[in-house]
Image 1 (cartoon, helix red, strand yellow):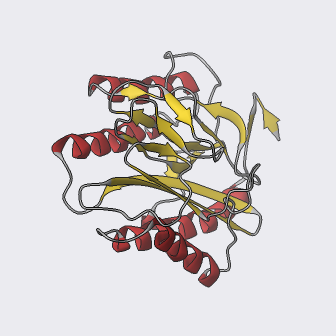
Image 2: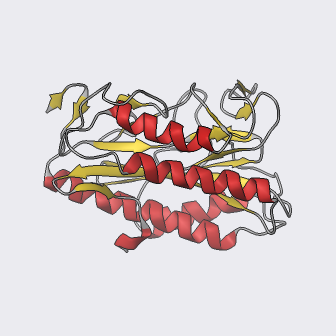
Amino acid sequence: MIRGGAVRRSPADIAAMRRAGRVVAEMHERIRDALRPGITTAALDRIGRDVLERRGATSNFLGYGHPPFPGVICASPNEVLVHGIPGPRVLDEGDIVSIDCGAVVDGWHGDAAFTAGVGEISPEAVRLIETAEASLRAGIAELHAGRRLGDLGHAVQRVIESAGFSVVREYVGHGIGRAMHERPDVPNYGSPGKGLKIEVGNVFAVEPMLNAATPETMLLADAWTVVTADGALCAHAEHTIATGDDGPEILTSSSFR
């Protein structure tokens, strides 16, 4: 059922989405465990493929779009904001990297991302990652029936800008369900009390994206990789969340395992 631009999922639908979310959470855990200086982003992608295969899931990233995306994860180091293509790039001590993973189980999608350090990282990089996570938590806290997407966006924006970082506006979160990207867009900025009214059964992928300096980005010639225009660090955090009678439920959290 479509209402106000967002699909309302039944309890059975959301139960099915938890299964996809668990696979994404396991991909995150395995990849986090493997992060160390010297590993390539291609090796991290192989870990993601192994989890998908063992869990009987398929990838919603592999083959997506035009040109078809070649990985099951997006691996985005340092100045790469989103959609980094896994390959021979070696991660070094002091790098940070955003890992975005997705999975499909029985036709239902899960999608989540995190940013982590490789070895010891700078205090500024730590603060950037912590702000990404805090802004995601602030956005999730607004996912109660009767609130509006403007409340969510405002909460995310407030955390990021209060820390002195900038909100990327060209890329936003989204609805999710039978497809990875569904209506509506879920911006990381907004005004309280404005925008789509949130209802029980809505499921959103909330994904703050923030730059350490200016908010501008550039798309590289491979048609996928998005980098900061000034070459500064950036971070990305994401969960798939259902709005229930008692508030938000994170479907891609490892606590469900």
